[in-house]
Image 1: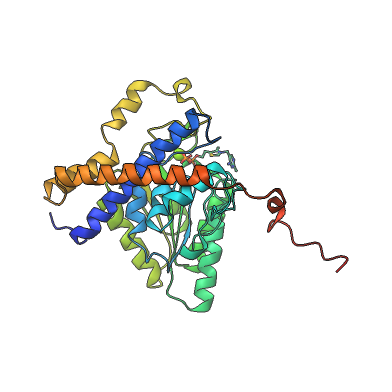
Image 2: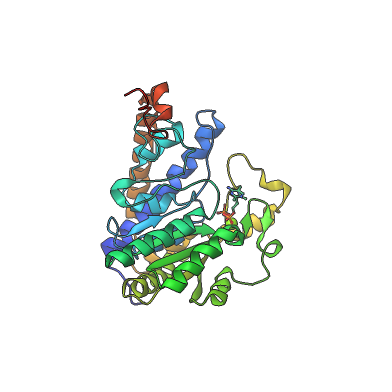
Length: 329
Ligand SMILES: Cc1ncc(C[n+]2csc(CCOP(=O)(O)OP(=O)(O)O)c2C)c(N)n1
Ligand SMILES: [Mg+2]
């Protein structure tokens, strides 16, 4: 096959997916050890996120992510140590200084905006940034991601509609993992593809196999180019599967069978990427072992770093959430 990117970039993409997976697995272990209070997983979503990350100009374009976007964040330069600070609520967490729930990302140095807990709010934030880019005459693009369940929110339609009307440089990614916690796709939408919703709003909607990182990269690249050249927004739906429960607080045995989960594990995006790169002779058994070893070291280092980091001082809880009291100044 004709590879869309140079070998070293493909290896970097694989490495980031692997690192994301190993960090994520450690987060589950830390939770079960009682060392952290919450984790929400990217496992199964890595290919969709890495495909999106490499379609933009990282550090130049804007990103409005959602809580599953660990792989995307790592590709944008968020470090494993920073991830552990955020999981453990420690000082120095760049997302919130240790005050927000984990996985509520923001990273100023990489143009990643802070996102709120109510799902789909990032959709209208992205449209707003798109409008600012257009008014300023810049050639930047915004990408934003949300789950398929989030596309049932009014705010999702409002943001996408506004971007379509104004032809804003935004790519709206829908990461369809079949579930919104326990609610299956067909219980909350009558369309087969969440991307079909775009057609009623007057913009293109494309569905892609989100387990295949190169397929996602290709579709996202086209959508990003379209946005950058002033042709307007696109909705891209990456079809994935949430291999883990919704979060560390969820028990998915109450609403889906083990057979179903096992079935989708056969399409593990990390495994598919590995097979693809092995077939092309880019990834060898030795390289895989090297990456695994490095990932273990990086994850261990990040955990040690997080555990030894201080907590924020209590008075930091209020700043910069509230302005300083200047009434008596
Ligand atoms: C407006 C709003 N309603 C409900 C919730 C609680 N909630 C958090 S995540 C979630 C499921 C979202 O599902 P989906 O958009 O498919 O994303 P996924 O978690 O599957 O990736 C819900 C209902 C919320 N955060 N915000
Ligand atoms: Mg979902």
